[in-house]
Length: 100
Image 1 (cartoon, rainbow, N blue to C red):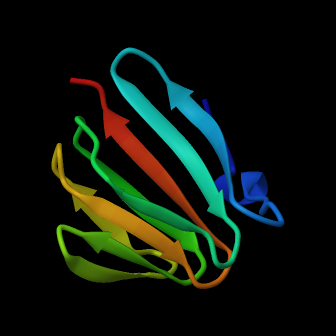
Image 2 (image 1 turned 90 degrees about the vertical axis):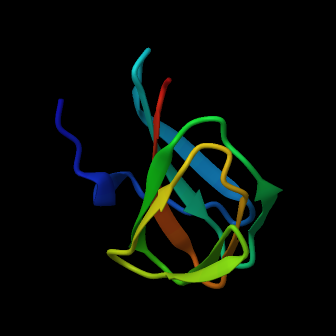
Image 3 (image 1 turned 90 degrees about the horizontal axis):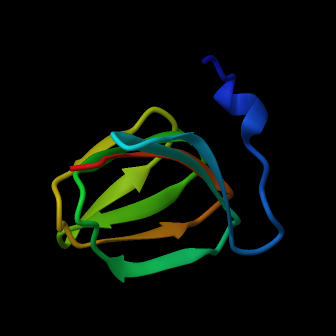
């Protein structure tokens, strides 16, 4: 399987657009496209994983620490890590979660 991720990026006028890239019993990889001004409130995941920012500008808060979201930023999350996001501009990223 091969995908040109940049060609899959499309931003909604408001909110979030998500597209499954890989979904199976071992791995979930999803492309998220967040419209400027969109926020995802604090939450956790029972799975470990990572975020890889494709483009944009935002803030990813991980366990109380703000991380600037810009192209090329990689963020590792342990399972049950509290996190939230805010897109200051249209922002896209890959979320990969390992199924335990």
